[in-house]
Image (cartoon, rainbow, N blue to C red; front, side, top):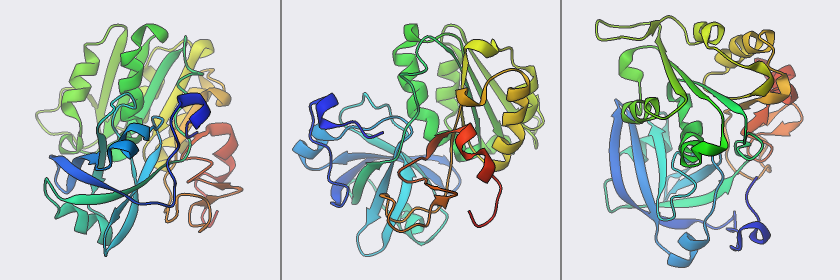
Length: 288
């Protein structure tokens, strides 16, 4: 949920207004994928901008259009907003041509984030796949910034090939955190791969968990959720303790256009993070 002015002391952003932001850093994550560090131009807007890990912004390129992109930076970072963008269409292709010093527009933040307050005192299993790890990056940073507030942390991430492994430095840094495990899987490994060979859901069977005190944060391909969550449920984790970040085409960000409807929900405002038991009936169904 977007924090209110009453809870943060800040005036919430107007979701209809596009705010200019300068590209201050552009980092290649993989072929066709870059992470952009943006800084809102207006100082007052920058001071008031607050988001929850798991929310997204609409990034607007003047004269081209806008696209929904997850915020991957730490919510406690006051000056910069990071977004990892894969070239996949007209708007993202045009954004990929921008360089440091050029300007994008930002609308947001939108949607519901991860329930990190509810997770305090519990063990955390974070399961991701491919570029789907982006929506949970800020949550991981936030958890480790408050490491004493959480139990064990297990980060499980799967890729097709080793070249698809983004944020390698961050995975290595997380591996060094106390009471933390990082488990990686690739189903098309090369000779350099030193981790599990197979699909990421194989690791769901093997990771040690205390089901009664564990919360699961999951994002990535929907097929991973459909196959992986039942494994965790069979191991005793209740469906009410599993949260998934879902992806649909989003054009407005405020539940008006209907493009992101999933059953009775609009993922741009009811999601993208949702409790699994609420969305399970619509996962994998076409036209809902």
